[in-house]
Picture 1: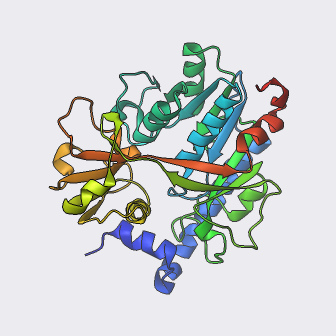
Picture 2: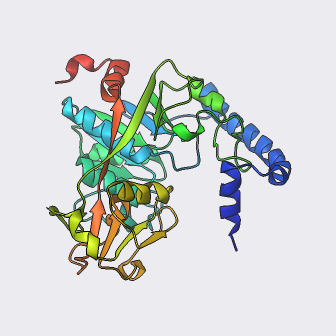
Length: 341
C-alpha cells in the first residue's frame, strides 16, 4: 500500500484531478505566504544579513531532486581552478545537531549532513553548516579568513542571508510542463515567475524544451560518471568485467534513485537487486543487501565510517559538466574576472 508522501509525489509528476481539487486551495494559500515572505525581505521590512565576502546562492524552486549538489561541486571546483579561494555553506539537512559546524577531516554525516560532507570531500573547499546560513558563513570566515567568495548550497528561499548572485537549478524534465504548481498541489516552493529575477538558470539532466527561456543567462548541465572505486579505498578501481559471474546489487538514498540504477545499467552492469531508500536516509552495513558486490552513490558512501570491513562495497562517482562556463559567469557578475588566474 503506497504511503501518503508517495501518493503526493506521484501526483506531482502525473496530476490526479481529484487530488488537484482538494490541494489547489492550499497551494494558493502557500503562494500568498511565500510571496509575502519574499516581499518582506525585498522591501526591507525584514532585514537580510550581509557577509564580508560575496555570496553566490545555488538553489531551486523545486522541493528537492533537481541535481543541484553536483552543480555546486562543479561551480566550486571551477572557481578554484581560476584561483579563487571558495567556501561552501549549507543548512546540512538530515544531521543530528542544530549547532553551527565547520567541517574538518573527522566530520561525519551526522555532524554535517550527507551533501555538505560530500561537497567538502569532493572539492576540498572549507565548508560550514547551520540552520542560519549567515551564522554558518561567519563561522566559516572566522576559521578560514582567506576565503574570498562563498557558495551557498541551496537557500534560494533563505532570504535572511543577502546574496550577490542567484543561480536557480531547474530539471529539464519540467521545462515543457504546463501543470506545475506550488506545494502541496505541486512540488514548487516558489512560482515559475521567480526564475525571472535570478541571475542565471541552469537546466539539469537533459535538454530544455525549446519554449523554456526564463532568463537571458541560460546554462545546461549533464552528469558524467567516473570509474567505480572501492569504498574507503578510492585508488582501487573496479574491473566491471569481473561482475558478470557475480550477484550485483545497487543501493541509493537519493531523490531520483532510478537515475543511479540506469547509469549502472548503461555501463553494462547487470543488477540482480536494486534498493531505493528515501533521500538523505541513514544507511548502515545492516541495510546492504546480500550480494557479491554492492554499488552505492557517493552521497551514501560518506555515511560509512572508515575501517569497516566492507570490501564488497563499491562507489560510483559522478560530476556535472556545465556549459557555458558558469564559474566565469559568476566572476563577471561580481566584477572579479580580472582577479582570476
